[in-house]
Length: 133
Image 1 (cartoon, rainbow, N blue to C red):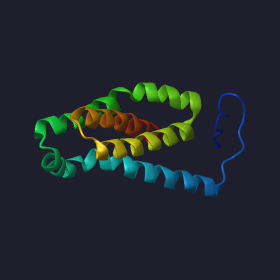
Image 2 (tube, rainbow, N blue to C red):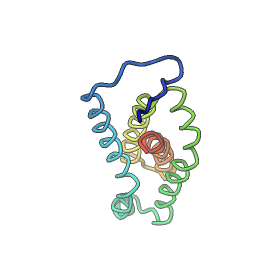
Image 3 (cartoon, rainbow, N blue to C red):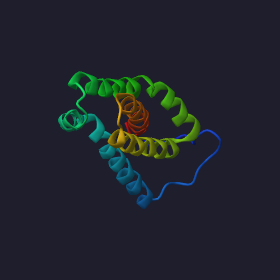
């Protein structure tokens, strides 16, 4: 019994080479590692942020809440953009937004700026997760 794969909307595309498939896996892993650090290693940064700025732990953790809410609730919109522009564009955009959030958060001198960086990180990580997963 053989299976056929339907052509994507808008016509057929040339088959993807073996090397290109491996490159997609590598890029996906790199993006997921960059994105996962914001989510899973955040608490490692909290004591340093608190010592540097004197902000309360609760106010710093609010940034993580902003990140998670944005990442989670924008996923359906990101899915729409994946369908419209393709996964390569959205993963690249997500990677740029994730990197930008690391930069903003590292230079944030106010809680507001930390929250903005966290929202941008939520958009970036959401784009990467929604595409890779």
